[in-house]
Amino acid sequence: MVAVIAAIGFAALGLLLGFGARHELTAGRWRRQTDIKPVPGFGWVLVIMPVVLAVIGHHTARLSWWSTPAYAVLTVVGVVLTAVDADVHRLPDRLTLPAMPIIAALLLVASYGVDDWSRLGRASISTVIVGVTFFVLVLASPSGIGLGDAKLAVLLAGALGWLGWTAVLAWLFYGFLLGGLWALALLITRRATRKTYIAFGPPLLIGAALAILNVSSL
Image (cartoon, rainbow, N blue to C red; front, side, top):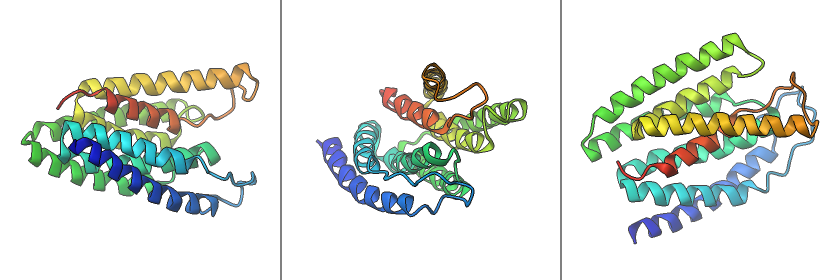
């Protein structure tokens, strides 16, 4: 019952945040002068924000109320990053970097609440391993994975690492699978070539959401 109330509350909050996010996105504040495409309407944000926030809020509340705020913040930031990356193929530092200490602090509180400090250690180790791996991939193939993708991976690695190694592995599996399928679909439909940069942020974020929902207990 408590989780259901949480879902309703987060859905209402998501709707309000969705209106605010849509306003900021359609204002084009994330764009540069070189971005000449028309600004999308981003109407889908009004639907996705409350739905995803309600689902993640309901699920994490069932796991532990202590962890819910961290993953609610991650969800909100994730939806906005998905919209921006899909539009201009960039993941702004002004969204990704501030989210890191905020979510880290909330997970610190959550560790206290569930009385399990080992989760912070696992989150830190996961952050280092995934971060180093992604930054190596950036150096090896900058046209495939961008620096923004690597910073996002660092953020997600910590959040998923707190839940467990299975969550980290599931996130990476889903993220790369979805990214590969999306790239293949664009190639088949000739909407992209092998040299076209394809936004990797949305697959990573969707993969993270699926991995969180796969966690059955803390």
